[in-house]
Length: 128
Image (cartoon, rainbow, N blue to C red; front, side, top):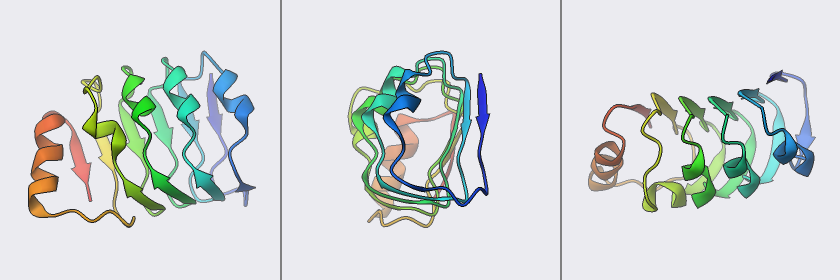
């Protein structure tokens, strides 16, 4: 299943019902006005290959549960208000991740932090 809702002027928190789409492979929600924290229920969507949430207003940290997305290949969280990377600090199960877009957030990376992230995801193109 694929959901494409880019550029639809959607706002507010993401609905809990998204966490029940167990066969979801692609979720495209970029360029809307979603707010709040990134939901931990994304970690239950184990078939997810593409998660594009860039250009919204999500804040807080990227939850550890994102680390359960073993089939994830593309993760775009750019241009939000995110401040932390909890999911990278836990055991890394994201071996298939090919693209990680994190630019234009509120992360406070030092060069050492960027290097550590690249070491945890050696086959991934990471954009800050």
